[in-house]
Length: 127
Image 1 (cartoon, rainbow, N blue to C red):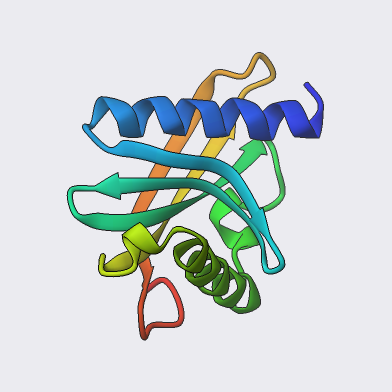
Image 2 (spheres, rainbow, N blue to C red):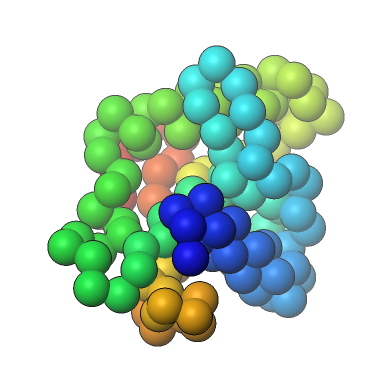
């Protein structure tokens, strides 16, 4: 499986899972100057940017370690740009969640970690 296939497989699995939990998917792979938001969804009235990190089994580091402080800042800035481009969401609370996946060679999920409210307005990092 190529790197892009691994990422796309993980993002599709997370989008299905979120929709199954009743979240409304607003956008996928939304790009701006600050980077890309993998998934933008509504969890009730909260606008959530979901950062999906996927690794293959046997990777040196777990997927969630790939989200650095600078990456968190770029995600918050990208979410601000998303809201500026979609002003109908301007009054919503916002947050960024992380979903970290580990896949086997066939693309089956071996490990799934959801870190809700990883970054909220005024915060800088997962705690």
